[in-house]
Amino acid sequence: MLLVKQTGAVAAGAVIGAVTRFHADEVMVYFGLPGHWSIMFINIVGSGVLGWLLAVGPSWVHWETYWRYFLTTGVLGGFTTTSAFALHTLVLNLNSGISSAFWYVFLSVVGSLMAFSFAYFKIGRQS
Image (cartoon, rainbow, N blue to C red; front, top):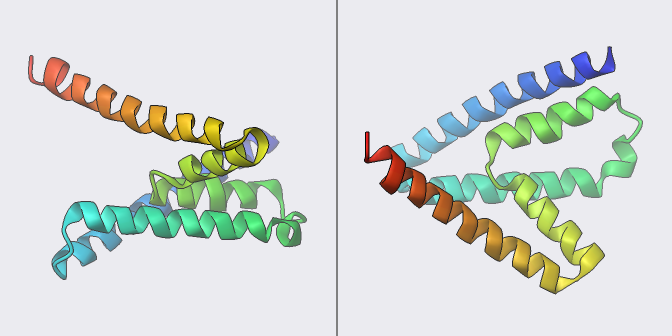
């Protein structure tokens, strides 16, 4: 039963996060901030919020598990595309050192760009 509640919490949070990101982006573009800069701003804000939530974690650890999933994986996961990336980079740096964190960032960014480029230019443009 817990998995059902967690899944529902993540799904509900993701809807809220994604819709919030959409509207925040539209508002910033409306006021003249180009799309990539508004998304970068949203991602930085979301990463900061995730970091803050994890830093204050001990004070909210008594919350039901599905509330934590709702906020972190759901709302922030839907709101940003980089909050989890930032978290994993920090954890790698703390647990394995800067070299591991560097390679994680490098391979994630380069790998994502390569996968996007391949899909866009080799697959998407073929059809």
